Amino acid sequence: LILIAQSAYAVRVIGYTLVNKAWLILALEPLHGVTYACVKTAQVHFTATTISRPGLESTAQGLTTVMSALGTIAGQWLGGWIMQEYGPSILYRGAGLIVFTSSLVFVASHVCSSSPAATNRRA
Image 1 (cartoon, rainbow, N blue to C red):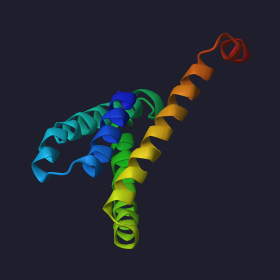
Image 2: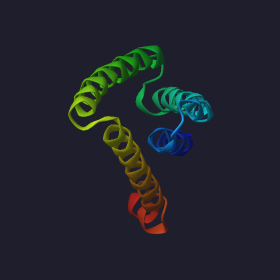
Image 3: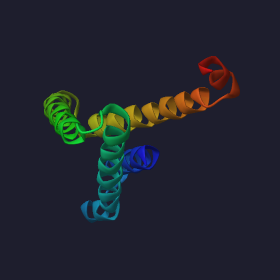
Image 4: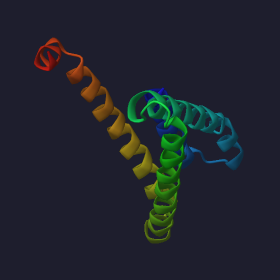
């Protein structure tokens, strides 16, 4: 789900900078729904199954939501500054590049952690 969300986000924000007619942005907007749904579903699943103790799932979800909100605030502040200083194309292309790069790191970490050598080290 994370890879689907990252791919949809990168295509959407880089696509914003490539369209030359405003109405074409509407063709990219369904990707926002894909991004949001996949991220939130993965966040809830990860929190409930990986980082919370039994009986504390709701508390963990609440803390995860608070951290997500703080990240949103920081991202909007930084994004506003970048847009003011460098313009929207740099902001959106940079965001797409960062998300695309993080998806490569995500895939590489999963490939390395599921390799036979990594599995043998854990045993």
